[in-house]
Image (cartoon, rainbow, N blue to C red; front, top):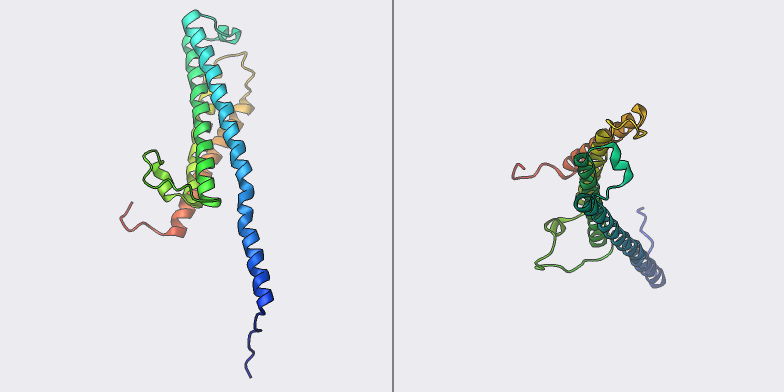
Length: 196
């Protein structure tokens, strides 16, 4: 004698549909998080303008911060430019999280055929976003590591060998994590048919 699955009652079906609709609606709770990241991006724009002003003031009017007395003008300019690049890379990371995260987890942005649509957005999914974020973190970590290496020559920088070692270990960990994520995605998705 075979067992038959219990027949759903209309009330149970309505309850499950209501629960499913509520769970699906909950994705909109992420919107304030993305709006907060937009505010954070505005703060980074403000920070970038302040750092650019200080760099311009130092180069044009020789009003350099007192810490730059310990290093040559060229080194100070290089560190200031690296700081600006760092701010830009973090802002790029924010854009990827805001736009890609909203598109992937909340709702479509309906940007088809928009001339300013980012190229990567047309094929964004959680895996692509994860790898792009990992690559952005590696870029940011590289900038910080380069700044550390430039500061090593400065005896008053306060950098210890232990601190430098941990920065290198963290950077290598970012690299290995990104490689592992890309390799895992490749295994899960299979090799592309066109051989790329």
